[in-house]
Length: 287
Image 1: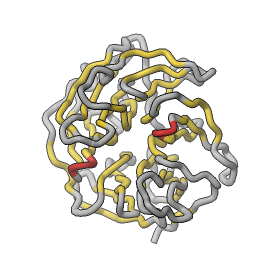
Image 2: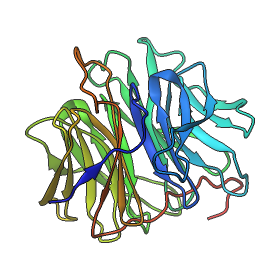
Image 3: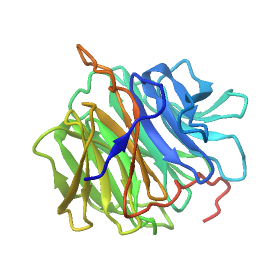
Image 4: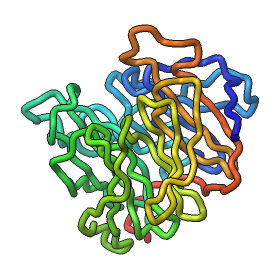
C-alpha cells in the first residue's frame, strides 16, 4: 500500500489548486485569497507569494513572464504580478443574480486558461466554465454547472476532464487544440460516495481524483475503470498534482465541526506512474 506523509506544519482552511510548474510547487488557500509556494526543504512552512482581497481559486504561470500568474479569483480572471499587484482581464460573474466566486482552474497544453465558477452556496446549475484565449479574451464555454472542479487535460491537449463536485460526476470532453472548441460531454466516472474535486492526468492517461468527504484519492484508467485508492488521515482531499512520481495532495478544514490534526495538511505520496509539469498560459496568439 502506498504510504502518505505530512512533513510541513501548515494547515490550510481550503487548500486547493496545487500545481507543479517544473520549477516550483504552488497552491492556494482559496477563501483566504492566498497564493503559496512550497520551499525545497520538505519540512519548511509554506511561503506566501501574494494575498488577494478576494477568494483565489487557482493559478497558472504566464509564459515568458517569470513570477507572473494568471488567476481565477473573485468574480473573474486577473494577472498577478511578481509584486502581488493585480490586473483584471474580466469579471464575468460580477453581475450575477447570486453571489458568485471563481473556483478551480488550469492552463491547457495549448496555452489557454480554463476556470470554473460557482455560487457561494453551491446553488444548483449556477456555475460556469470559462476559457481565456491567448489575447486575454474571456469566453463562457459551459453553463449549468454547480461546483466545477478541475479541469484537467491530457498531455496532447485533446481531452479535458471536468468534475461537477455537487453532482458526484466527472465528465470528459474532446478539445480542439487550435480553436479551444469543446466537444459534447460524456460521462467518465460517477462516484457513489464523496465529491470529485481536484484532478491530474498522469503520463499513462489515467486520472487521479481527490474525493472530498472520503479521505481518499482515486486513480481511474483512461476507460473510466477504477484502478486504485489512496487513503489519507484527513477527511477532505481537495487538490492533487504530480511532481514526477510524487503525488502532492491538498486538504481542507473548512466546514468541519471538529477538525483532526491533519485536516488541512499538505500530503505527499510516491507513485509508480509520473506526471508532467503544469502548462503555462501563453499570451499573444502563439500555439
